Amino acid sequence: MNKLEKNTEVKLSSLSTKERIQTILSVLPENPGCYQYFDEKGTIIYVGKAKNLKKRVSSYFNKEHDNNKTRVLVKQIRDIKYFVVDTEEDALLLENNLIKQYRPRYNVLLKDDKTYPSIVVKNEYFPRIFQTRNIVRDGSQYYGPYPSLYTAKIMLQMIKELYPIRTCKLPLTPETIAQRRYKLCLEYHIKRCKAPCEGLQSSEEYLKNIGEIKEILKGNISTVSKILYDEMQALAAELRFEEAQKVKEKYEVIENYRAKSTVVTPMLTNIDVFSFAENEKSAFINYMHIGNGAIVQAYTFEYKKKLDEAKEELLAMGIIEMRSRFKSTAREIIVPFEPDMNLEGVTINIPQRGDKKKLLDLSVMNVKQYKVDKLKQAEKLNPEQRSTRLLKEIQTQLHLDKLPIHIECFDNSNIQGSDPVAACVVFKMGKPAKKDYRKYNIKTVEGPDDYASMREVVYRRYKRLLEEKAPLPDLIITDGGKGQMEVVREVLQDTLQINIPIAGLAKDKKHRTSEFLFGFPPEPIGLVQKSSLFHLLEQMQNEVHRFAITFHKDKRSKRQTASELDTIKGIGDKTKTVLLRTFKSVKRIREANIDELTKVIGEAKARLLIESLSK
Image (cartoon, rainbow, N blue to C red; front, side):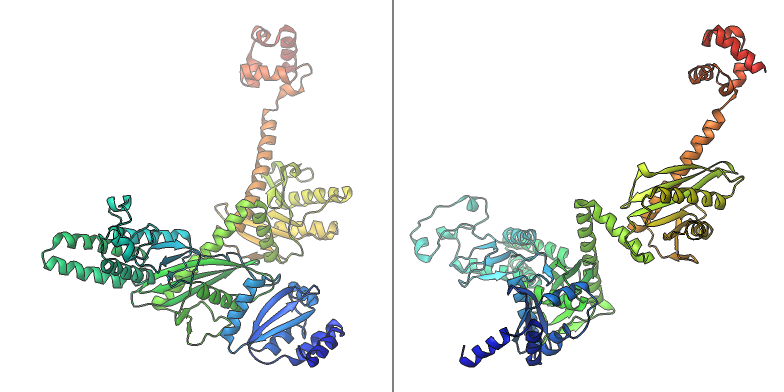
C-alpha cells in the first residue's frame, strides 16, 4: 500500500458509518461485478451481483424497503467491497463461488451443497473404472457428477454387464505382465475379467472396450448401440454366430437402458431444462440435461431464502449452480420464465408448445412433486408445522390481523322444535380441544327457530367469557350460511360490543361442505376441493355437527326413557332399571300382578308401585 492509499484508508476510518458508505457509493463504477457487505465485526453478511454496480448497491440505501429482513440487513452494513468483472456471466459465476466460500448470513442457502459422485476412467495402461467423489489431476477422465450415488451405481452396473473390465488395483505395465507376477483371480473364473494381468487380453481389445464405455458415459448411448448392432450383423454374415450372440446380448442391455431413459424425441440433444417452485421459506429448482433424446441427468434442489429474493434472481442462481456443478456446455436452456441473467452464446427459451414444452412440463411436474414431498417430510417430523401452515392459509384468505390459533364453531340441533340444543366446539392450533367443548340446552326459544337458538347460545357463551375475563377466540365459524352469520354479528357487535371475525360454512343439498363464507355482506372464499385447508374446515364442520347431534340424541333418549316410574317416591334408579329390564316397558309393568312384581322388587315396593300407578 502506497502513501496515498494509506492516507485514504485513514480518512475513511475516521468518518461515521453513514459518511463512509456514502463516500463508497459515490465512487462505485457502473460496470458489472460483485459486491460484499460487512458488519461491524468485519464479517461478510451478504454477497450480491450486479449488471451495474453503482445502481444496484446504491438502491439499498436510497429507498425504503418493504421487506423487513432487507431493512435489518441494511442497518447492519458497516463496509462495502466490490469486484469489477468483464461480463454479467462472470459476475454470476463469481457470486456463486463467493457465496459457497463465505456462506454469508443473508444470502440464500443451498441446502444440498455437497460433493456429488463421478465415474472415473483412470489414466493407466489397463484403465480401471469406478465411482469417486475426489477429483485428482493425474490425466484421468471424470464423467458426471451424478445426482446421486444410486444413479452412478446403476451406470457402473450396466457397464460391468457389458464389458469385462478389471477391478483389481494391481499396477499393470507391459513389464509386470511379461514377468507373470500375478495369478488369476476369482473375477476371471466368473468371467467378469479376461485377465489382462496374465496377458490373456490384449491392450488393443481392452482399450476398444474402454472407448465404447467412454461414449456411454458421455451420454452417446445411441452411438454405442449402432456400433454393436453393425458388429453383430457383420459377425452373423460371416456365420460366426456364437460371437454374434455375445454382441447381441450387449446390444440388448444397451437398448433396454435406452428404453428406460428415453422420454423425448431423439432429435433433441444437449439441452438444459429448468423449472421453479417456491413457498415462503424456500425455492425449489429442477434441472434436467437432455443428450441424444434422453434425460442424461436430473436433479432437484432447494434454496433457503434469507431476503425477499425475486424468483428471476433465484432461477438465475440455480442455472449457474447446476451448469457449474454438472459441467454442462449446453447452448440452449429451457425455462418457465425469463431469469435475471444473460449467458453469452446460450439461447434461453420459454416454449409454448411442442416437444420442448413437454420437456418443461415434465420438469415442472418433478419440481412440484419435490416441493410437496419436502413439505410432507417436514410435517411428519414437526406436526405443528402443518397446523401452522393451514392456519396461515386461513389468515391469508380472510385477511385476519393475527393467526387464528383459537377457533370456535357453533351448530344447532332439533327435530321440529323438540329437544332443541346447541353445541360449541373449540379448535386450538388446528386440533380439537375437547375439554373446552360446551353443550347448551335452548331455554328461551319455542319451536324450530335456528336463528333465535343461535342468538341465545352465542350471547350466553361470550357474555360468560367476558364476565370471567377468559380469552376470546380469534375466529368464530357458524355451521350455516349468511343468516346465521348475521345473527352472530348482531350479538357480538351490537349487543356485547366485541369484535371477533366471523365465517360461515355452508353445505350443499347432499349435506357436504361446499362454501366458506366471510365478510359482511358474506362472500364465498374460493377453496380447492380436497386441499388440506378444505379438509381442515370440513373436519371442523363435521365435528361440531357430530357433537350437537350426539347431545340431541342423548337428550331425546333420556326424555323417551323418562316415565311414570321417575315420579314415584321410593322407586329409585336401580329399581327402575331392574323393572324395565324384566318387563321391557311401563305398560307391561302396569299389567303385571302383585306376585310377579314381588318376585322382582319385593312385596313392599310392589304394593307401593301398584298403588302409585293406579292413581
